[in-house]
Amino acid sequence: MTPDVLVVAPERFDVIAATTIADLIGASISMRDTCSVALCGGATPEPVYRELTHRSINWASVSIYFGDERAVVPDSHDSNFAMATRAMFDHVAIPGNQIHRMLAERADRGTAAREYDALLPPRLDLLLLGVGPDGHTASLFPGSPAVTEPWRRVVAVAAPAPPLLPNVARMTITPLVVAAARHVVVMVRGADKAAIVQRVLEGPDQPANLPAQFARSGTWIIDQAAAAQLQ
Image 1: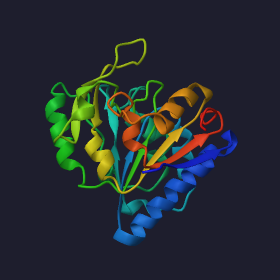
Image 2 (image 1 turned 135 degrees about the vertical axis):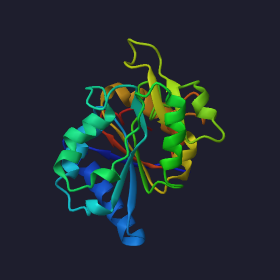
Image 3 (image 1 turned 180 degrees about the vertical axis):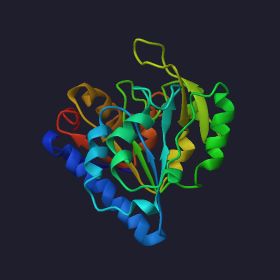
Image 4 (image 1 turned 30 degrees about the vertical axis):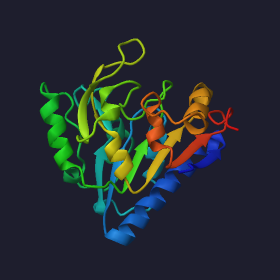
């Protein structure tokens, strides 16, 4: 499928991304009385989450999940859950029991992954993703066994060793979750992502080496710098 690509000015990125997400959440609640959302981590979505707190959303009807998490305690600076809490959860009326964090800090991450798999709905209503400079998304890294996982929806993984990325041990959703999601929104910004965005969206289909291609049929919100090499 052809991606739906929105190229936006950098100063409009957070507003447009938050509006798109809020509209999708509202549409899901209108259709199904609920909306299951899986969040992504990283620097790009944090201001988008802050912008979402200013949108009219029925948070009581929203259930939150995560696409991946590092093996750190929940208040760590490196925790996706901690970032989302600071940016969004502390400022909206969402019941705490509807926020389902990945317990990636557990010693037995394999068991934690199986339990999170059982917790996920069959289909997420909305999955938010980003793209790393190597083409990874969530914690699906090029060449990882997770990118060809045939059955499990959540697995324990190892990221490339530092200094490329901190906190090697992680948990992540697999491509099965991406494929099943009703809506996928991929957010990318910055000139350092321009080359990988072009490869993911316009290059040959090779998701084992460019896992972000698993989300190629989603809605891509890209700032002008990250879109600079697109044809």
